[in-house]
Image 1 (cartoon, rainbow, N blue to C red):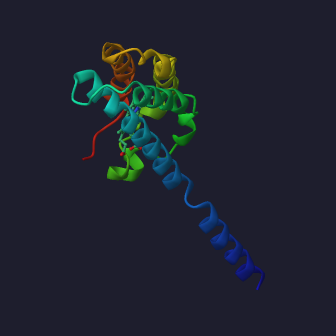
Image 2 (image 1 turned 90 degrees about the vertical axis):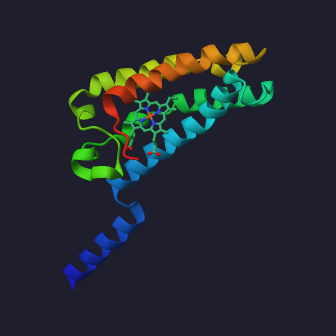
Length: 150
Ligand code: HEC
């Protein structure tokens, strides 16, 4: 009986907490989708594919800034690379052998995102430089640490 209760407690607590690895992957992928959902319209405004709208641009820029303050690396626990999870993730195993550099690349993104909400104000021509500055830091990390599975 004692074992049965222990087993039940285990089952119920794991269903409440979920699988920490799966949760981490979903959390970081959702985070990146939020980032790109805000980057895309800014990039389209810079290219003239979307009419410049100062209030909207400032909102996207501020959202990216706010997101950049989040401690994303906490959602990269060991055991969550393509090595263990296959196509469920795009996170290369070398993230964990270069974790300091990975953190540095995230810090570079944080720095680039500083002031984005204000910098995109004042006209379409102000959007491009912001998108480029931030976009470079997305690419720098992806080039090293991400594989595209789709
Ligand atoms: C510090 C490294 C790093 C930075 C900076 C970074 N990314 Fe990523 N990105 C990753 C990794 C690693 C993955 C794969 C995550 C996974 O699948 O578990 C990823 C995945 C993604 C995905 C795919 C999410 C999905 O649906 O699975 C998108 C979109 C994305 N990033 C956009 C961006 C954008 C836009 C920026 C910059 C504004 C950015 N990333 C900055 C490392 C980074």
